[in-house]
Image 1: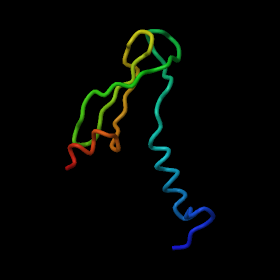
Image 2: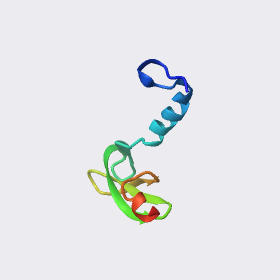
Image 3: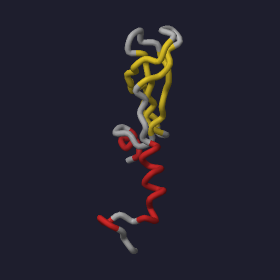
Image 4: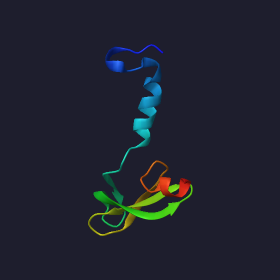
Length: 81
């Protein structure tokens, strides 16, 4: 395998970029109750065989404003053993 500068394989660049994109976290989402984009907090709802289910809630009023299924989270590996 041929490596580029600093041990980075240019052929793997797309795979690395996709992995980084998959790990995005929401910091602000629209809250229908507050009628504006607001900072959110992430809460773990369930640990499932298919991944960890999280809910994003408005930091001001606590209204659920979104969700996420994380298949690479810290709890996901507990059920895979």
